[in-house]
Amino acid sequence: MAIGAALLAAAVVVLVYARRFAERGYQTQERYRSQVFDAELAALTRLQEANRIREDLVGSVSHEFRTPLTAIRGSAATLASRGDRIPIEARQTLLRGIVEHADRLGKLLEDMLLAATVRAAAESGAVADVTAALSSFRLGQARPPVVLDVPAGLAAYVDAASLDQVVRALADHVRAEARRDRPVTLRADRRGGDVVVELLYGGTRSESELRALFEPFGSRESAETGRPATLALYVVRRLVEAHGGRAAAGLQDDEVCVRISLRALRPTADLPVGTPV
Image (cartoon, rainbow, N blue to C red; front, top):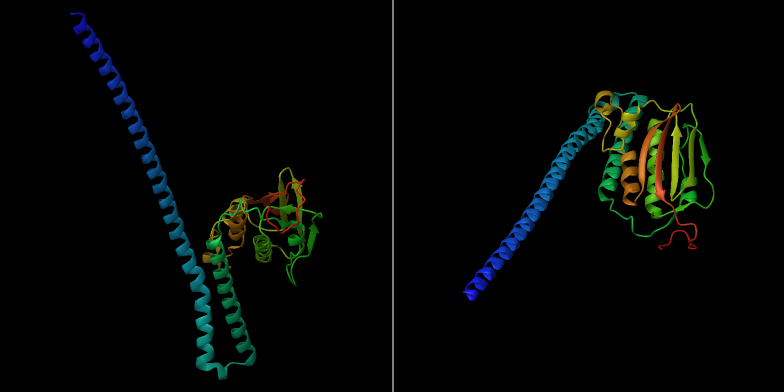
């Protein structure tokens, strides 16, 4: 009798443990299923967002390419059909227009390829001389004067080629956006663990319009006004974020302020600028 009771008790214990084991297994299975579902949902959301961006980009690109191509074809056709009957000044105007529109297409293609090929490099360890790179900032003739306020010795974790591309893209942005009767200020300093670069100029855009310029063809005005689209700030954002930095734009007093932040080289580092650490 005692043996039977012991066996029964043992069987009950085994059943209890088996049930608990099964419940834990079921809970683990449900947790894994929930994680897989969440991952699939997140992936689907990213795919939908990527598809939306692709559709917007394709629509914008088709317009941005069609406009200069139409102008180039029209001018070339006019020159081919009756160029000998057109006054020399008019022929030169048509030829200049062809060159300008071709340059516009080339710049758009260059910026698109650059933005598309940017890869994350935040941990590469490359260091660049920010002071030297900003000192090369140029706008060219018939542009607003530039005031540089950049101290010596600024360095950040970014490769030199990418930083040069950022500076060129900032200059492209200013040439397209800044008022010519106002000076442009390019300044930089170290704030905590960051090197902060600020570009200030007189402009006419609202803060929402400025934020849109950080997206590919974020400005819709080119389709409405014929004003050339620019990818300059989109390129800046892509390059800066790839190196662990941040890029933003807003209004400061009565000026536009484009601000980028890069990870500063640690003060105790005794390394030559331009070499990996």
